[in-house]
Length: 116
Image (cartoon, rainbow, N blue to C red):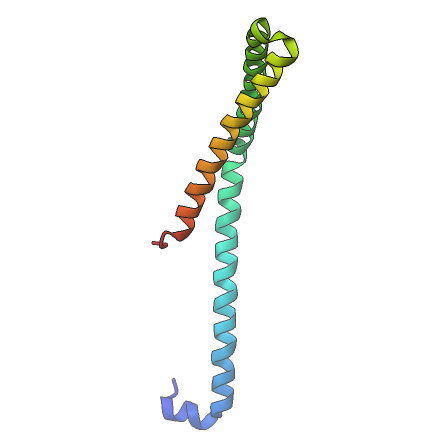
């Protein structure tokens, strides 16, 4: 093994700096590849769960449509069919507006919070 001074004598400072930069690049690439592999593994493990959640969301959406339709039918007894359906739509839109406002407020709060 060469002593540090022998290494400097045999390989110039430029060569050593070049090796250092190359090693740094290889290290950075290895870290990026490790993180990509980690993300891919997590995505592969969660594919089924995401698909099941998507199916559940579609079922909830279908249930909400049926409930709004039933509300429209109920209100149609008092307001006539067009008025009942319109009232059910307005009620649903007001609820959606409230949910969106709460969600946007939560996102704004989360965006301002410091990362840990």
